[in-house]
Image (cartoon, rainbow, N blue to C red; front, top):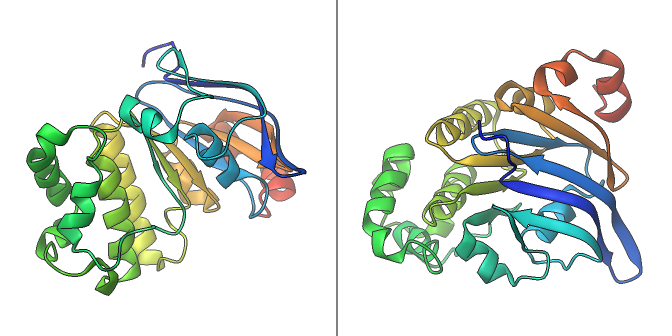
Length: 238
């Protein structure tokens, strides 16, 4: 893997109104990595994603993507650079077809390769191919999550941020989802995986950060974190 970070976050602080959520977060993702951010609900994981992708404005600190400062950029500009955020809750357009939802993923990036990228998504998610003309709102929860990720892939991400992709899925679909995340990474896409599903996240990640109360309390290789029983008991509730 390239030694220089694709994403480099330093001293990041953010919040909403008078509420401080992120408190000096520092994180990096190198090209080719899956990096997991783990922690219980409400510790600031989604705020971290929104701040990196420009939806929430950083109050302090820096966010560099591929060497360029992006903490003051608009979300659309950040997308155009290849940093793609698949938010929690899927956020598909239920009244549009599967195919129309996918095509919207390339509105700021890779428009000229839309057809080729759509075919690539259909190869990764054959069920979306079978349902491409179906209304997205009629899909199952697992299929909607596939659609949300597929829409992100339409923009040819250099870094794909996945926010709680396994939330609400059955155990069988969760297993399938994590296998697909590993496959996407093997195809050359770096992934920031933000999850409460600790065990399976650590199975696919190269490195991991543990978040509590808006800051990271531990980081290391996925293997080291998985092997630390005190850490899992204290911060992850295992």
